[in-house]
Image (cartoon, rainbow, N blue to C red; front, side, top):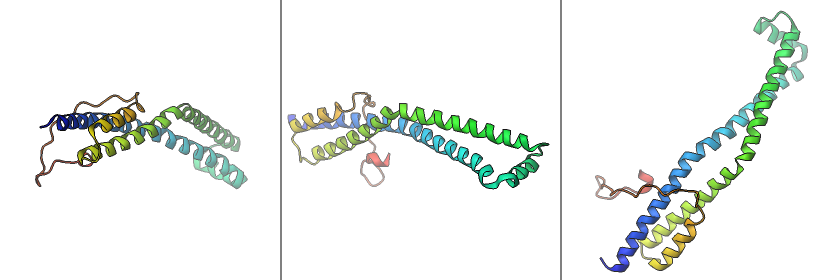
Length: 173
């Protein structure tokens, strides 16, 4: 193996380690952000439903809820509906404010997704010889510095070959 080819393989291994770290970061952080957004939507919708029933249904709605829940007075219906509306509205407001405070985390996800894509492209350019190792090192440094908050993943282990005699791609794993 020539010196340049050895450097190319070392750089490819470093790219894969950094790319794997970015993929791990995305796997760990995407679900929490999605969950918060979904909870906010559900709570806001519940608040709308609880307040819309009395607004559109009027006394018939309150009588229906009174009979459904077996309440002795329609004032209990209004109190219950108001309490539910307050609780879910507060929950929705809290989740909305949490989402705003997590905006930096959402922005980081976008940065990591972009850097991972750039690292994927860089690996392919190097693998097929369309980029010199020196240029690859410069680009690797440029892409890596965009995501200093992402730790590198453990170095990749040697890949086993599949039944067809090829090594599995990252998308296969």
